[in-house]
Length: 282
Image 1 (cartoon, rainbow, N blue to C red):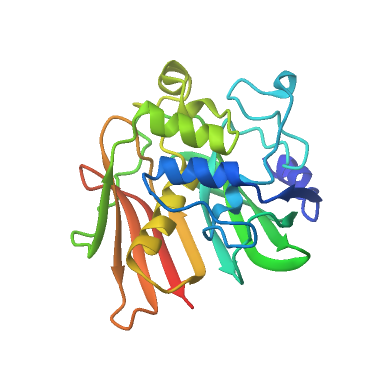
Image 2: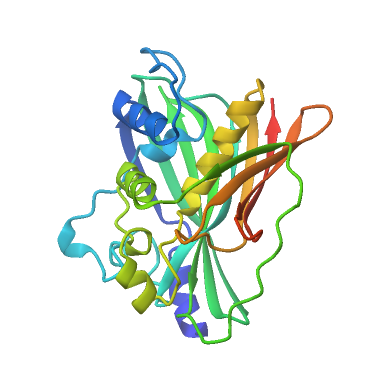
C-alpha cells in the first residue's frame, strides 16, 4: 500500500481546465427535477449558487468506461485500485453567482492524496480544488473530497449515526428511479450504483440504488433558497452514510437565531444521518 500511495501522490499538483457557457437547458431541467416553478433566468441574470455542478461535464467515450460506469482511472484522477468510489464531502466559498449566457471556466487541481483505514478497510481520499470563473472573474472556490474504499465486508459496516430529532426546515422526498435517473443525466454520470439495481446489489453489496452525494448537497442548497432570503457565502458538507431507494429521505435545516448560518442534514426515513452541512449566509 505504501508503494502504491507514493505513486498516487505523484498526481498532486496535476491540473486540468474546462471551458463552458452557462446555457438554459441545465437550469430548466434541474428546476423541474426539484419541483420548482421558477422562471428561467434571462441572459445576464444569476443562476442558483452551486449549480455550476451541471456544467464543465466530462464526456468520456463509452470505450474508456470501467465496469462501474466511471472512466478508467489514471487520467486526471490517480489510478487508485480500491474498487468503490464516492463523494465524501466538500467546501465551497461563493463570491458571486454565475450568470446566464456568460462564458465560464473551471480550473481544477489535485491538492491532496490521504490514506486512512478503519473498520470497513483501507481508504484513500483525493482532494480536488476547483476555481470557477465567469467572464474571467472568480465566482467560487471549491474543494471536493473523493473517497476510494475497499469492497464491502460482511459485518464491517459501522452503525449508522442518528440524525437530529428536530428541524425547523424539512422536506421529504422519494428517491425513485425517475429522480435518480434525471440527476445522473444532468451531471452525465454513468456510475452504475445510481441506476443499475443488479450491479449495486450483486457487485458492490448495497441493499439498493444509492442517492447521489451531489444530489443531496444540491437539495440542501435548495432548502436554503426556499427558507432564507440571504445569499450563501459558504457551504461545507460531509457524507456520513448512504441513502438508498428503499425508503424516503428528508432534507432538513435549523437556522441560527441571527439568520447568519444554518445547520443542515439529510436523513433516511428510519432516522439515520446521511449528510451534514453548515451554510453561512452573506
